[in-house]
Image 1 (cartoon, rainbow, N blue to C red):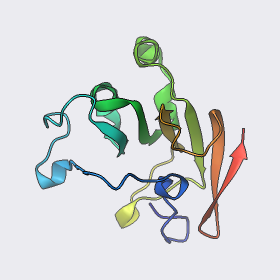
Image 2 (cartoon, rainbow, N blue to C red):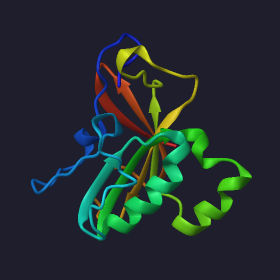
Image 3 (cartoon, rainbow, N blue to C red):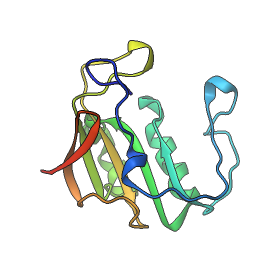
Image 4 (spheres, rainbow, N blue to C red):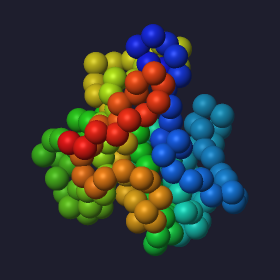
Length: 151
């Protein structure tokens, strides 16, 4: 992700320790479809992804099955993913994320892609790996350093 001047923004990884264990990845553009990949149930301490908006529900359901009981699940997604009557049953099924920091300024993506939506990290932090307060907060990139502001 890039800031408004085109410089790289700090990532969520700056806020948490990363396990030095087996790491798997999926990237549709490289022929590995996460929704089709058999990665195993309950095997991951940490899952971080930025799924396509239209597939986010399916991604979250699959990720929660693959996450260890004390795992941490982190999704970058538009803030408006929280909304719509259609998603009420989904949120009742999976539960709201423990932590939801909104990104300020709005990110721009590689190759200049952007949209007019606000983004946040949806974090199910069962493992206590992410040093952020519960509920809504803001992650503000100032001079390429993250600063936390509680909502």
